[in-house]
Amino acid sequence: MAELETRELEYFVAVAEELHFGRAAAGLAIAQPALSKAVRRLESRLGVRLLDRSSRHVTLTTAGEALLHHGRHALNAVAAAAEKTRRAGDRQAHLRLVIKPGGDGNLLSGILAGYAGRPDARQVDIIFGGATDRADHVRDGRADVALLYAPFDDMTGLDHETLAVEGRVAILPPDHRLAARPEVTLADLARETLPRWKGVRWTGAPEARPGPEVTDAAEVMQMIRLGRTVAILPRSLARPLHPDLVYRPVTDAPDSELVVAWSQDDRRRLVASFVAAAVDAAGQSSPDADGPRPTAGPARPRRR
Image (cartoon, rainbow, N blue to C red; front, side, top):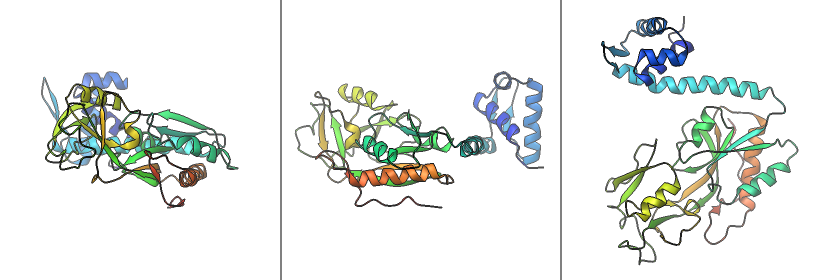
């Protein structure tokens, strides 16, 4: 018998997320004694205690925290495998592209037009994701491809091709001490308060102070207006420009990359065809002075 069975893993994750057997059982639509028995059976098979139980509390052990982390990924992988298998057998399946609103570097129209001209093109369904969850859409099978920003988005489990590179800008309130400068450096911004993106581990500079938690660009702009934070964003994500804020190039910030990304284990022709069309379209685009720079020459999508 396998050490981990999908159903038992699903049961454990439900309990670990709720930290309450009654609520987890109700959500799973099973009896609480059956759920408790399944978790104990799992602990016995693995030879470790996953949960510390008392009459009032349920807490995760170190081993339980590890299984929760890896178990979520495993369940997502199983669900994605089933979804991709079904879609692989559907010759009429649409291609699903997840993007952030405004997060296409003005390339999307050209990409869609280029892909539509290919003989194997499918209908493209556009899914709008949030600031930090678009990669998860691809990993768990909700989308086939995504437009992401490196190094900001988590590329774990994904392959990608770079479509464009661009500099970053600092966004400041008009009364900020740096607002009068034509450009700024990372050293100038080292001790500023930067926003924390919800669901993303803090990756700000060590000297920076973590500021308010935000979920999207609109919240960032509001917090900048209130003087609670400043932000450093890829140039295309700073648009549209708000007249009551100040935008200054960060001259020594590493470039960001707009990429098209897909799952490392996805070998379907419709995905490879879309990636190739996206790279071709990006290589043929003519950016304006403030936009991202297309990559030099259309590369070919990597095959595995």
